[in-house]
Length: 421
Image 1 (tube, rainbow, N blue to C red):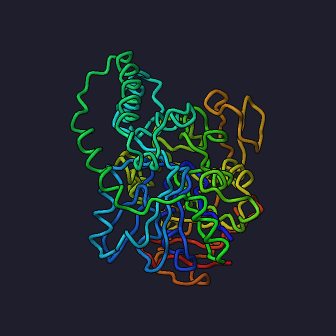
Image 2 (image 1 turned 120 degrees about the horizontal axis):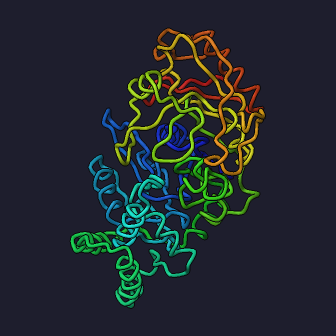
Image 3 (image 1 turned 135 degrees about the vertical axis):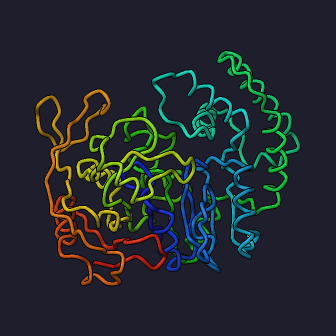
Protein backbone atom coordinates (compact mmCIF):
# COMPACT_ATOMS: atom_id res chain seq x y z
CA UNK A 1 0.00 0.00 0.00
CA UNK A 2 0.95 3.64 -0.54
CA UNK A 3 0.06 6.45 1.86
CA UNK A 4 0.46 10.00 0.62
CA UNK A 5 1.61 12.96 2.71
CA UNK A 6 1.27 16.40 1.16
CA UNK A 7 0.64 20.07 1.89
CA UNK A 8 -2.85 21.56 1.79
CA UNK A 9 -1.92 25.24 1.57
CA UNK A 10 0.70 27.19 -0.40
CA UNK A 11 3.58 25.04 0.83
CA UNK A 12 5.75 25.53 3.92
CA UNK A 13 3.27 23.61 6.10
CA UNK A 14 6.04 21.73 7.94
CA UNK A 15 5.84 18.53 5.88
CA UNK A 16 9.47 17.56 6.43
CA UNK A 17 9.03 17.18 10.18
CA UNK A 18 5.79 15.25 9.69
CA UNK A 19 7.35 12.85 7.17
CA UNK A 20 10.23 12.39 9.59
CA UNK A 21 7.71 11.63 12.36
CA UNK A 22 5.75 9.05 10.34
CA UNK A 23 8.74 7.51 8.52
CA UNK A 24 9.34 4.86 11.19
CA UNK A 25 6.05 3.22 10.17
CA UNK A 26 7.16 2.76 6.53
CA UNK A 27 9.73 0.82 4.55
CA UNK A 28 10.04 3.29 1.65
CA UNK A 29 9.75 7.09 1.40
CA UNK A 30 9.41 8.41 -2.16
CA UNK A 31 9.35 11.95 -3.56
CA UNK A 32 6.94 12.18 -6.50
CA UNK A 33 7.17 15.78 -7.80
CA UNK A 34 8.83 19.18 -7.46
CA UNK A 35 12.50 19.98 -7.29
CA UNK A 36 15.00 21.99 -5.25
CA UNK A 37 12.37 24.72 -4.80
CA UNK A 38 11.14 22.56 -1.91
CA UNK A 39 12.64 22.98 1.53
CA UNK A 40 11.79 20.33 4.12
CA UNK A 41 13.27 21.23 7.50
CA UNK A 42 14.29 18.47 9.93
CA UNK A 43 16.12 18.52 13.25
CA UNK A 44 18.67 15.71 13.45
CA UNK A 45 20.83 15.30 16.56
CA UNK A 46 19.59 18.79 17.52
CA UNK A 47 20.93 20.20 14.25
CA UNK A 48 18.73 21.89 11.64
CA UNK A 49 18.86 20.17 8.25
CA UNK A 50 16.98 21.37 5.15
CA UNK A 51 16.34 18.74 2.48
CA UNK A 52 15.41 19.97 -1.00
CA UNK A 53 15.30 16.81 -3.12
CA UNK A 54 16.23 13.83 -0.95
CA UNK A 55 13.16 12.24 0.71
CA UNK A 56 12.73 13.04 4.40
CA UNK A 57 13.05 9.40 5.49
CA UNK A 58 16.77 9.40 4.78
CA UNK A 59 17.82 9.72 8.44
CA UNK A 60 15.95 6.56 9.49
CA UNK A 61 18.06 3.36 9.38
CA UNK A 62 16.70 0.68 7.08
CA UNK A 63 14.30 2.94 5.17
CA UNK A 64 14.67 3.04 1.38
CA UNK A 65 14.35 6.50 -0.21
CA UNK A 66 13.38 7.01 -3.85
CA UNK A 67 13.50 10.16 -5.98
CA UNK A 68 10.73 9.49 -8.48
CA UNK A 69 10.36 10.37 -12.15
CA UNK A 70 7.97 13.24 -11.37
CA UNK A 71 10.80 15.17 -9.69
CA UNK A 72 13.11 17.54 -11.57
CA UNK A 73 16.61 17.07 -10.22
CA UNK A 74 19.43 19.58 -9.82
CA UNK A 75 22.63 17.49 -9.55
CA UNK A 76 24.52 20.37 -7.87
CA UNK A 77 21.94 20.75 -5.12
CA UNK A 78 21.76 16.97 -4.75
CA UNK A 79 25.52 16.67 -4.25
CA UNK A 80 25.45 19.35 -1.52
CA UNK A 81 22.54 17.60 0.18
CA UNK A 82 24.28 14.24 -0.02
CA UNK A 83 27.41 15.72 1.56
CA UNK A 84 25.29 17.06 4.44
CA UNK A 85 23.44 13.77 4.94
CA UNK A 86 26.71 11.77 4.76
CA UNK A 87 28.17 13.96 7.53
CA UNK A 88 25.64 12.29 9.89
CA UNK A 89 27.06 8.87 9.01
CA UNK A 90 24.33 7.92 6.52
CA UNK A 91 25.41 5.64 3.66
CA UNK A 92 23.45 6.91 0.65
CA UNK A 93 24.72 4.06 -1.52
CA UNK A 94 22.46 1.82 0.58
CA UNK A 95 19.31 3.86 1.04
CA UNK A 96 18.95 6.43 -1.80
CA UNK A 97 17.65 5.47 -5.25
CA UNK A 98 16.92 7.71 -8.25
CA UNK A 99 14.59 6.96 -11.15
CA UNK A 100 16.16 6.96 -14.62
CA UNK A 101 13.13 8.91 -15.87
CA UNK A 102 13.79 11.88 -13.54
CA UNK A 103 14.47 15.03 -15.56
CA UNK A 104 17.68 16.99 -15.01
CA UNK A 105 17.85 20.71 -14.27
CA UNK A 106 20.61 22.22 -16.43
CA UNK A 107 22.51 25.45 -15.70
CA UNK A 108 20.73 27.04 -18.67
CA UNK A 109 17.37 26.13 -17.09
CA UNK A 110 18.35 28.24 -14.09
CA UNK A 111 19.45 31.06 -16.39
CA UNK A 112 16.15 30.89 -18.32
CA UNK A 113 14.19 30.97 -15.07
CA UNK A 114 16.03 34.10 -13.96
CA UNK A 115 15.77 35.80 -17.37
CA UNK A 116 12.03 35.08 -17.65
CA UNK A 117 11.29 36.35 -14.14
CA UNK A 118 13.30 39.54 -14.69
CA UNK A 119 11.39 40.20 -17.91
CA UNK A 120 8.04 40.18 -16.07
CA UNK A 121 8.72 43.42 -14.19
CA UNK A 122 5.84 44.02 -11.75
CA UNK A 123 4.10 40.82 -12.89
CA UNK A 124 6.64 38.47 -11.27
CA UNK A 125 5.18 35.16 -10.06
CA UNK A 126 7.76 34.79 -7.29
CA UNK A 127 9.85 32.01 -8.84
CA UNK A 128 12.57 30.53 -6.64
CA UNK A 129 14.89 30.82 -9.70
CA UNK A 130 15.96 27.19 -9.36
CA UNK A 131 15.17 26.33 -12.99
CA UNK A 132 12.05 24.34 -12.15
CA UNK A 133 9.63 25.87 -14.68
CA UNK A 134 11.98 25.72 -17.70
CA UNK A 135 12.84 22.08 -16.88
CA UNK A 136 9.18 21.06 -16.78
CA UNK A 137 8.68 23.01 -20.02
CA UNK A 138 11.41 20.93 -21.67
CA UNK A 139 9.81 17.80 -20.24
CA UNK A 140 6.41 18.55 -21.77
CA UNK A 141 8.11 19.87 -24.91
CA UNK A 142 9.95 16.53 -25.22
CA UNK A 143 13.38 18.14 -25.17
CA UNK A 144 14.59 17.34 -21.68
CA UNK A 145 17.50 15.27 -20.49
CA UNK A 146 16.88 12.59 -17.87
CA UNK A 147 19.02 10.86 -15.28
CA UNK A 148 19.11 7.71 -17.41
CA UNK A 149 20.66 9.71 -20.26
CA UNK A 150 23.81 10.04 -18.14
CA UNK A 151 24.51 6.39 -18.87
CA UNK A 152 24.47 7.05 -22.64
CA UNK A 153 27.81 7.68 -24.39
CA UNK A 154 26.13 10.46 -26.41
CA UNK A 155 25.08 12.46 -23.34
CA UNK A 156 27.47 15.36 -24.06
CA UNK A 157 26.13 15.70 -27.62
CA UNK A 158 22.56 15.75 -26.29
CA UNK A 159 23.55 18.33 -23.69
CA UNK A 160 25.16 20.67 -26.25
CA UNK A 161 22.12 20.44 -28.51
CA UNK A 162 19.77 21.45 -25.68
CA UNK A 163 22.15 24.13 -24.44
CA UNK A 164 22.21 25.76 -27.90
CA UNK A 165 18.42 25.85 -27.94
CA UNK A 166 18.45 27.50 -24.52
CA UNK A 167 21.12 29.98 -25.60
CA UNK A 168 18.91 31.22 -28.44
CA UNK A 169 16.13 31.83 -25.93
CA UNK A 170 18.53 33.61 -23.56
CA UNK A 171 19.68 35.82 -26.43
CA UNK A 172 16.06 36.86 -26.97
CA UNK A 173 15.94 37.92 -23.31
CA UNK A 174 19.28 39.73 -23.76
CA UNK A 175 20.60 37.72 -20.82
CA UNK A 176 24.31 38.51 -20.39
CA UNK A 177 25.28 36.68 -17.22
CA UNK A 178 28.24 34.30 -17.48
CA UNK A 179 27.20 30.81 -16.34
CA UNK A 180 30.54 29.08 -16.98
CA UNK A 181 31.04 28.45 -13.26
CA UNK A 182 27.54 26.95 -13.06
CA UNK A 183 28.41 24.52 -15.85
CA UNK A 184 31.70 23.45 -14.26
CA UNK A 185 29.88 22.72 -11.01
CA UNK A 186 27.12 20.91 -12.93
CA UNK A 187 29.44 18.46 -14.71
CA UNK A 188 31.34 17.78 -11.51
CA UNK A 189 28.02 16.96 -9.82
CA UNK A 190 27.03 14.66 -12.70
CA UNK A 191 30.07 12.47 -12.01
CA UNK A 192 28.91 12.20 -8.41
CA UNK A 193 25.32 11.43 -9.46
CA UNK A 194 26.49 8.55 -11.66
CA UNK A 195 27.91 6.84 -8.55
CA UNK A 196 24.49 6.67 -6.88
CA UNK A 197 21.79 4.01 -7.34
CA UNK A 198 20.09 4.83 -10.66
CA UNK A 199 17.11 2.51 -11.21
CA UNK A 200 13.98 1.94 -13.27
CA UNK A 201 11.90 3.72 -10.65
CA UNK A 202 8.51 2.39 -11.75
CA UNK A 203 9.70 -1.24 -11.55
CA UNK A 204 11.56 -0.55 -8.34
CA UNK A 205 8.50 0.88 -6.54
CA UNK A 206 6.15 -1.83 -7.81
CA UNK A 207 8.56 -4.55 -6.69
CA UNK A 208 8.43 -2.97 -3.23
CA UNK A 209 4.61 -3.09 -3.37
CA UNK A 210 4.59 -6.75 -4.43
CA UNK A 211 6.88 -7.54 -1.52
CA UNK A 212 4.29 -6.02 0.85
CA UNK A 213 6.40 -2.99 1.72
CA UNK A 214 4.75 0.09 3.20
CA UNK A 215 5.39 3.19 1.10
CA UNK A 216 5.01 6.85 2.00
CA UNK A 217 4.80 9.24 -0.97
CA UNK A 218 6.16 12.63 0.06
CA UNK A 219 4.81 15.75 -1.64
CA UNK A 220 6.56 19.08 -2.04
CA UNK A 221 5.10 22.62 -2.21
CA UNK A 222 1.34 22.68 -1.50
CA UNK A 223 -2.02 21.92 -3.09
CA UNK A 224 -2.80 25.58 -3.80
CA UNK A 225 0.35 25.68 -5.96
CA UNK A 226 -0.76 22.77 -8.16
CA UNK A 227 -0.30 23.54 -11.88
CA UNK A 228 -3.95 22.65 -12.60
CA UNK A 229 -5.84 23.45 -9.40
CA UNK A 230 -3.70 26.11 -7.75
CA UNK A 231 -3.94 29.91 -7.97
CA UNK A 232 -2.80 29.96 -11.60
CA UNK A 233 -0.53 31.48 -12.90
CA UNK A 234 1.03 31.96 -9.46
CA UNK A 235 1.72 28.24 -9.11
CA UNK A 236 4.52 25.71 -9.43
CA UNK A 237 5.04 23.60 -12.55
CA UNK A 238 4.03 20.17 -11.26
CA UNK A 239 0.98 18.36 -9.91
CA UNK A 240 1.34 18.74 -6.15
CA UNK A 241 -1.89 16.91 -5.35
CA UNK A 242 -2.41 13.20 -4.61
CA UNK A 243 -3.13 12.41 -8.28
CA UNK A 244 0.51 13.33 -8.99
CA UNK A 245 1.65 10.27 -7.04
CA UNK A 246 0.52 7.89 -9.80
CA UNK A 247 2.37 9.56 -12.67
CA UNK A 248 5.21 10.79 -10.45
CA UNK A 249 6.17 7.33 -9.25
CA UNK A 250 4.50 4.91 -11.64
CA UNK A 251 2.02 3.36 -9.21
CA UNK A 252 -1.61 2.52 -10.01
CA UNK A 253 -4.43 4.39 -8.16
CA UNK A 254 -5.74 1.28 -6.37
CA UNK A 255 -2.52 1.10 -4.34
CA UNK A 256 -3.20 4.44 -2.58
CA UNK A 257 -4.69 4.12 0.89
CA UNK A 258 -4.51 7.17 3.19
CA UNK A 259 -3.97 10.73 2.03
CA UNK A 260 -2.53 12.67 4.95
CA UNK A 261 -2.86 16.42 4.50
CA UNK A 262 -0.70 18.91 6.39
CA UNK A 263 -1.91 22.41 7.24
CA UNK A 264 -0.67 25.12 9.52
CA UNK A 265 -2.97 26.42 12.25
CA UNK A 266 -2.86 29.67 10.26
CA UNK A 267 -1.77 30.42 6.69
CA UNK A 268 1.39 31.54 4.88
CA UNK A 269 2.53 32.10 1.33
CA UNK A 270 5.91 32.86 -0.28
CA UNK A 271 6.18 34.88 -3.48
CA UNK A 272 3.47 36.60 -5.51
CA UNK A 273 -0.14 35.64 -6.07
CA UNK A 274 -3.52 35.86 -4.37
CA UNK A 275 -3.79 35.26 -0.62
CA UNK A 276 -7.29 36.20 0.63
CA UNK A 277 -6.56 36.04 4.38
CA UNK A 278 -3.21 37.86 4.24
CA UNK A 279 -2.62 40.20 7.18
CA UNK A 280 -0.49 43.09 6.00
CA UNK A 281 -0.47 44.60 9.50
CA UNK A 282 0.95 44.16 13.00
CA UNK A 283 -0.88 40.85 13.50
CA UNK A 284 0.67 39.44 10.32
CA UNK A 285 4.06 40.65 11.43
CA UNK A 286 3.59 39.01 14.83
CA UNK A 287 2.68 35.68 13.18
CA UNK A 288 5.81 35.95 11.03
CA UNK A 289 8.02 36.75 14.00
CA UNK A 290 6.67 34.08 16.37
CA UNK A 291 6.45 31.44 13.65
CA UNK A 292 9.89 32.31 12.22
CA UNK A 293 8.23 32.48 8.82
CA UNK A 294 11.11 32.71 6.40
CA UNK A 295 11.53 30.37 3.42
CA UNK A 296 13.67 27.28 4.07
CA UNK A 297 14.95 27.38 0.48
CA UNK A 298 15.10 31.12 -0.28
CA UNK A 299 15.08 32.81 3.13
CA UNK A 300 12.34 35.11 1.87
CA UNK A 301 9.88 36.41 4.49
CA UNK A 302 6.57 34.58 4.19
CA UNK A 303 3.30 36.43 3.92
CA UNK A 304 1.09 35.51 6.88
CA UNK A 305 -2.63 35.39 7.58
CA UNK A 306 -5.47 33.56 9.29
CA UNK A 307 -6.44 30.01 8.32
CA UNK A 308 -8.51 29.84 5.12
CA UNK A 309 -11.09 27.05 5.35
CA UNK A 310 -12.52 27.71 1.88
CA UNK A 311 -9.15 26.93 0.30
CA UNK A 312 -8.51 24.13 2.79
CA UNK A 313 -11.84 22.46 2.01
CA UNK A 314 -11.03 22.70 -1.71
CA UNK A 315 -7.64 21.06 -1.11
CA UNK A 316 -9.20 18.25 0.96
CA UNK A 317 -11.72 17.62 -1.83
CA UNK A 318 -9.29 17.39 -4.75
CA UNK A 319 -6.81 15.29 -2.77
CA UNK A 320 -9.28 12.90 -1.14
CA UNK A 321 -7.75 13.68 2.25
CA UNK A 322 -8.47 11.07 4.94
CA UNK A 323 -6.44 12.53 7.84
CA UNK A 324 -5.12 15.99 8.70
CA UNK A 325 -2.03 17.04 10.62
CA UNK A 326 -2.11 20.60 11.97
CA UNK A 327 1.30 22.20 12.49
CA UNK A 328 2.50 25.27 14.36
CA UNK A 329 -0.50 25.40 16.70
CA UNK A 330 1.84 26.85 19.35
CA UNK A 331 2.42 29.96 17.19
CA UNK A 332 -1.15 31.02 18.04
CA UNK A 333 -0.48 30.75 21.80
CA UNK A 334 0.01 34.51 22.16
CA UNK A 335 -3.25 35.59 20.52
CA UNK A 336 -6.36 36.47 22.54
CA UNK A 337 -8.62 36.28 19.48
CA UNK A 338 -8.38 34.23 16.30
CA UNK A 339 -10.16 34.66 12.99
CA UNK A 340 -11.13 31.78 10.70
CA UNK A 341 -12.11 32.38 7.07
CA UNK A 342 -15.33 30.39 6.62
CA UNK A 343 -16.48 31.90 3.30
CA UNK A 344 -15.48 34.32 0.54
CA UNK A 345 -17.37 37.31 -0.74
CA UNK A 346 -16.99 37.68 -4.51
CA UNK A 347 -18.74 40.61 -6.21
CA UNK A 348 -20.91 41.02 -3.12
CA UNK A 349 -22.04 37.37 -3.14
CA UNK A 350 -21.01 34.96 -0.39
CA UNK A 351 -19.56 31.64 -1.54
CA UNK A 352 -17.69 28.64 -0.16
CA UNK A 353 -16.07 27.84 -3.51
CA UNK A 354 -12.56 28.79 -4.66
CA UNK A 355 -12.93 31.06 -7.72
CA UNK A 356 -11.56 30.01 -11.11
CA UNK A 357 -9.24 33.03 -11.32
CA UNK A 358 -8.61 34.19 -7.78
CA UNK A 359 -6.33 37.09 -8.69
CA UNK A 360 -9.02 38.53 -10.95
CA UNK A 361 -12.08 37.93 -8.80
CA UNK A 362 -10.33 39.04 -5.59
CA UNK A 363 -12.36 37.17 -2.94
CA UNK A 364 -12.80 38.93 0.41
CA UNK A 365 -12.64 36.67 3.47
CA UNK A 366 -15.74 36.28 5.63
CA UNK A 367 -14.48 35.54 9.14
CA UNK A 368 -15.73 33.65 12.16
CA UNK A 369 -14.06 34.77 15.37
CA UNK A 370 -12.82 32.43 18.09
CA UNK A 371 -11.27 32.96 21.49
CA UNK A 372 -7.55 32.30 21.49
CA UNK A 373 -6.00 30.04 24.10
CA UNK A 374 -3.59 32.80 25.22
CA UNK A 375 -1.54 30.20 27.08
CA UNK A 376 1.54 28.09 26.24
CA UNK A 377 0.59 24.88 24.46
CA UNK A 378 4.10 23.73 23.59
CA UNK A 379 4.54 21.89 26.90
CA UNK A 380 1.53 19.64 26.29
CA UNK A 381 2.43 16.01 25.56
CA UNK A 382 -1.06 14.51 25.21
CA UNK A 383 -4.44 15.59 23.90
CA UNK A 384 -6.10 16.27 27.25
CA UNK A 385 -3.34 18.75 28.14
CA UNK A 386 -4.17 21.03 25.19
CA UNK A 387 -6.13 24.23 25.99
CA UNK A 388 -9.92 23.92 25.83
CA UNK A 389 -10.19 26.85 23.40
CA UNK A 390 -7.76 25.09 21.02
CA UNK A 391 -10.08 22.08 21.04
CA UNK A 392 -13.01 24.36 20.15
CA UNK A 393 -10.97 25.81 17.27
CA UNK A 394 -10.04 22.32 16.04
CA UNK A 395 -13.59 20.97 16.39
CA UNK A 396 -14.94 23.77 14.18
CA UNK A 397 -12.33 23.05 11.51
CA UNK A 398 -13.09 19.30 11.61
CA UNK A 399 -16.81 19.90 11.19
CA UNK A 400 -16.32 22.42 8.37
CA UNK A 401 -13.97 20.17 6.39
CA UNK A 402 -15.66 16.85 7.10
CA UNK A 403 -12.17 15.46 7.70
CA UNK A 404 -10.62 15.20 11.15
CA UNK A 405 -7.36 16.56 12.46
CA UNK A 406 -5.58 13.47 13.84
CA UNK A 407 -2.31 15.09 14.96
CA UNK A 408 -1.30 18.52 16.24
CA UNK A 409 2.28 19.74 16.15
CA UNK A 410 2.88 22.13 19.04
CA UNK A 411 6.55 22.96 18.59
CA UNK A 412 9.57 22.45 16.31
CA UNK A 413 10.95 19.43 18.19
CA UNK A 414 10.68 15.92 16.75
CA UNK A 415 8.70 14.79 19.80
CA UNK A 416 6.30 17.75 19.77
CA UNK A 417 3.42 16.04 17.93
CA UNK A 418 0.25 15.04 19.76
CA UNK A 419 -2.21 12.40 18.58
CA UNK A 420 -5.70 13.78 19.08
CA UNK A 421 -7.76 11.15 17.19
